[in-house]
Length: 358
Ligand code: COI
Image 1 (cartoon, helix red, strand yellow):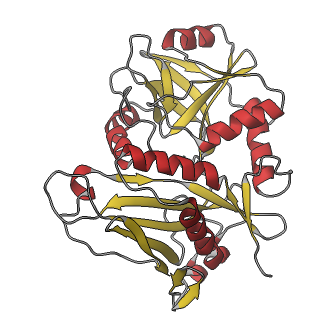
Image 2 (cartoon, protein in one colour; image 1 turned 30 degrees about the vertical axis):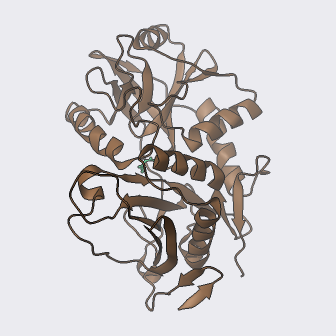
Image 3 (cartoon, helix red, strand yellow; image 1 turned 180 degrees about the vertical axis):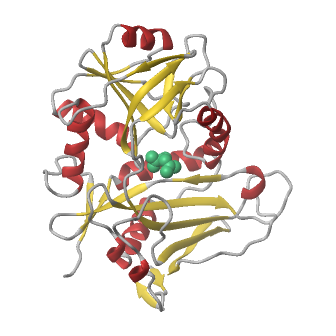
C-alpha cells in the first residue's frame, strides 16, 4: 500500500495497458487499471482508497438492486497539447452529482473528496488518456445503496466508486429520430433532472421500439398535448432556427447537461444568438416545413454533439441538413475541443490541469 495524502493506493501488479489497441477503442468497452472506492457507513464517507479494477462481491439483498438508489456522473479528461491531462468542468459535475444524490435521498460527499479522488485516480492511470482526435478518458463516478436487507427503506449504507476508460467518438453517423408521442422519459416532479440509473433503464423500451421502426433514437417530450420537446435519447437537444440556437429550458424533467451549458456559453462567445424556451411539435414541424430549421443536434458528455439528420413527427419524416464545418454545431464543438485540449484559452476556468511528469 502507498499512501497519497488521505487516499490509500494499491497499485496493480500487471497493467493491461499494452493489450489496448488505441486506434480502435470504441465507447464503453475498455476499462483502465484502477478504481476508486469509498464506503458510507454510520453517517460518514470513509475508507477512500484506490485498488486494481476488478469485480466486487456483495449480497443479492443490497437495496440498490431492488429499489434503485443509484446515481452516476459521466466526465471526460483530455490529453492537452503540452502532454498534460485536463479534466473538464469538475465543479459543474460535482454540483449535479450532489443534486442527484439529494433527489435520491442519498448522502452527499464533500467537493474535496470528489476532486481528490478523481485527480488521484487520473494521475495513477494517466497513461490511459488517449490523444486521438475525438478521444478522451471517460470517468464514471457512481454511488449505490449497499445496505443488505430487502425491506423497503432508505439505505443507511452506500458505496461510491469511480472507474475510467479510454473512449472514442460516440456516434459514427448523424441520427434519425422520431418525436415520441406516447412514452415519456420524465414527468414534472419526477427524477428527470437527476442522473439516476432508473431514468436510463426506463428509456430503453421506447428507444428499442423506435429502433425497430428504423430510428436511432427518440425525441422525448413533456407528455403535454403540445408535445414540448425535452431531450434527444440520452442527450440534451438543440435546434438552429433562423440562425438562433434554441434549446428547451431546464426543468425538473430535463438533465442540466454540462455540455449543454458549455455550448450555450460558447455560442454567446461566438456571437450566436441563443434562446432557452419551449418548443412544441407544431412549431418544430412548421420550422421544418418552412425550411428554417437549419440544424438539429444532441449534446452530452459522451457524444459531445450528435447531429440529427431527420425528425419524424406523427409518421411524417423531415430531413435536416447535416451541419457543415462552418455551421453552428461544429463551430461551437471545435472551440470546445480546443479549450479542453489547451489549444484555445480556458477563459471560464473549466479545466483542472493534472501535470504529468515526462
Ligand atoms: C453522456 O452523454 O455522458 C450520457 O449521459 C450518455 C451515457 C453514456 C450514459
